[in-house]
Length: 213
Image 1: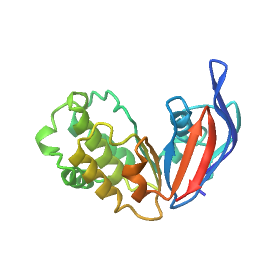
Image 2: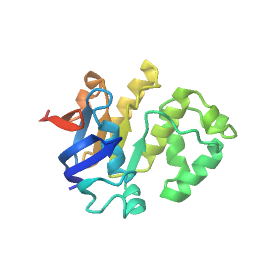
Image 3: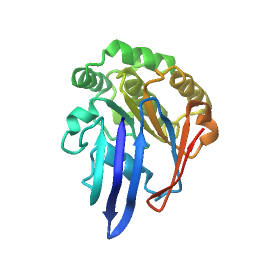
């Protein structure tokens, strides 16, 4: 089992943002995680990534506590946030860091970027934070797919992409190993429906629907 959550709860300002949730995600699950703003989707993902200590309940990712064993857990996860972080490293420095920290060959990142029509070699000296929103997103996608993780988590991954970029992105996703588990936080089920086999809908910190597709 990739993720096992037993009655997990998290509060902010005295209010439950995760309200005693039970959730299991197995190898090969491709999940569309849906719900209105404030439903708890991003908080759930951050709990999976070990960002938060929970009020109660138990979370296991790859059989480990994602807070206590965070480095080990994150080694098997690729995560693309909705808003790219303000990284001040140049593209070349960022690629070197990613390559050394995750044993991901730079050549693989260049290859994936090229497939999304992102010319990294022409931008190696540019700071990441000065790239356009679309270029940032394409680079983060290229890094995530190059890492060959067991779990991919995408938070609105196409938010900054134009229609052609979205089409290229979905084409790349269609080639992901079937054993790899994927979570997409999305408001566009129609776009990713061919890529998912499960839909989870959250509202007010609870899972109100969990359906196999």
